[in-house]
Every structure is written in structure tokens, then in C-alpha cells.
Figure 1 (cartoon, one colour):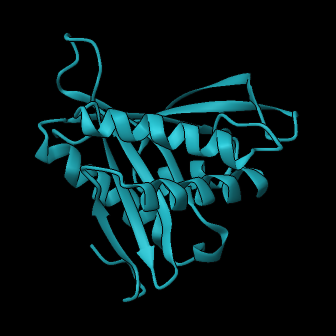
Figure 2 (tube, rainbow, N blue to C red):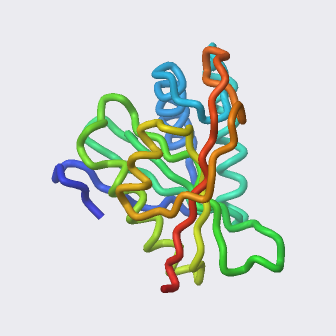
Length: 178
């Protein structure tokens, strides 16, 4: 699925090769250095970023998660994951995680395109309920609300920003079955 710019293509990666892992690590590092609260603190070393994506690759290969990427002329510039490995009483649900857009590709509709593609992929896999969390009041929260995600509530001081400052987290869901 292309986004507004014809040079960006979004696709799933059933298997992550070493080149994918390296590029995804660069996207993660860029996002954390840009202030995104996505589970990592500054400084985020390349080794830690590579280790994270290597673990994600194992989960994707095992069918526990779906990794979507966005590519432009320079390589991978965005990603989002559907986590499918949930308890047996939740076969209809997936968690959305690590929606990341490299700073070079922002403000071009890429986040929206990634999220819409994730919804399509979730439906293909029989998932009708999606859940995610985002920094309260952040850019991602505004995106999710614009896309029609339903806000469940806020948890103050839930996590830390990469620089150590506390931040709240807002939980959202999207019902794909109605």
C-alpha cells in the first residue's frame, strides 16, 4: 500500500533478513534520539537496537508477530508490528506495537498508512480487536484519535521519555468487527 508519496511502499516482512534488521535498528535509534518514548532510554546503542530487532525477527519467523515496513528510496523509513502471540482466550485480538517513523519521512502520511495497513493485515489474520498505548498528548495519540481509535484512559507517570522525564500513557482500542 503506497502512502501519499508514490515513492513509499508499505509491505509485510514474514522474515527479517540481516539488512532489514540493520535498517530497522537505524529507524529505532532515530526515533529514540528524536525523543520517542518507545521502551528505550538514551543513549540507545546500535548493539541494543540490533538485539531488539533480532528478537522481533525470531517472533516474526515463529508467527507470533507481523512486521510491516515502509520503504522509500533510502530504505526502511517506518514500521509497525501486530503482536499475535496472546493468551488462548484472546484469539480475536492483537496488540499494535512500535509504530515508528524515521524523522526523514515524517509529515507525509506514513503513520496513517502504516496503521491502516496494520488494520487490513489484522483482519486477514482473523483479528477484530486491536489495542495499543501511546504517550499521553503526543503526536501518536493525536494520530490514533484522528484515525478513530477509542481512548480507554490515561495512566499518569507510566513510563519515561528517553531523557528520563516521566510521561503518562494513554490506552486505545480499535474494533474492526463492527
